[in-house]
Image 1 (tube, rainbow, N blue to C red):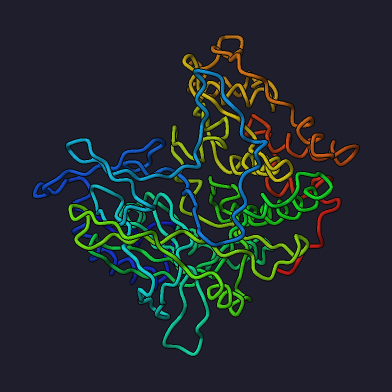
Image 2 (image 1 turned 90 degrees about the vertical axis):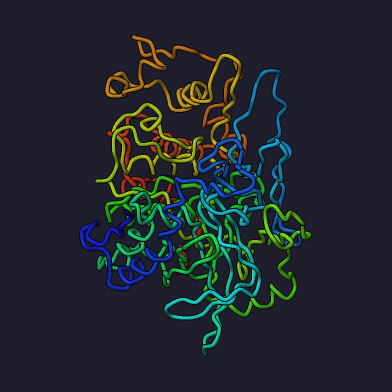
Length: 510
């Protein structure tokens, strides 16, 4: 029996969330029952299959292919490196859903597989442009798809039938994603409620995405939670447009990292670990640009992929909306940049972390999680160190490859040792998986013969940073990448760092 966690989480559930939870329980009940029991009456068994699967093949990030947005800048060609034979690069950036039948034939979805429900897929809500979603505070007309991922799709919508026809973003959770919240595997609503109930005057609250309202709806697949926020622009393309020059990127990076650390310090003060700090989860608020959004939609209309006919999957032509994020309208230069920390779907209360629990995107995963050491808030600081180097250089912090003799984890640990120094013996002694990767002397059991990564200082120097700026940036990143989490600084500690406090753009109003 599925229950809503009404008496949990130290009283953070408000009456509105309780009412919504009771409604959603009814919508999801039949869907929960089917979550583990396949429908035996189906003529054909369809399965999703792809690498890096979290739920039958949906990987961690979508491949964004908008047709008309001028913001989509390709990755620098300098980042594309040919791999020697037998070396497989690690890639979490691909999200492809393929549906395979009993005969081995497959259908590759244009984006999210909304045509399938639980248990054959996560159960994405089939949404088309013009769909009306009915909330408690307003009705919302869907106008554009902003993205999709492991547990949800995100849409730009406009309030209708009210004097305020402003825009919002709506995160529509899959059936399985909605179920996870009420099975107490997902704490996103708890995080939002905790922020709403917090009375502290913390400056970081202004740099967190906040919930406008949450409501439940249903589709042919089951029940869905809908989380409404103010509209946002994506941050990541902005980082790709900046030239890789230290004197340009340094004040930009400092401005962003200050805001991220403020948001993170506030989030940690509520007793949560975010676990998913990365550029993808930073958004640029557009709440004051509703006229600009309306004009943008006229100039760059929302679009769909060509219809596809697959009666075995969907009784009508399959029309998939294209992911087309909104650019940072009104932002004329990086000096006025404000970012908000988003996506609390992977967050977890500190007291709910259990031994051996895995978290964080693979390439950003802190060593204490990889090696099953006790972990908590310091993993977010590790991710801030990774993010800082990425913002300064335009490149991810680690290149992780797999060979015939080495796993991705073997190479990942070696890359950490290359950049952040040897693993402290005292830390290794407390790691449950130490013997899987390290010898008695603390050396790696399987050292790699791949080309060594450049040091953090060398990578920063290649952008043109020099002198005190180079030394300060390098020291800041290495502090955040302290291998032993007990010695790693907190978000509050890093906010006082000398390099971070020197320079940067003037803090804009949040």
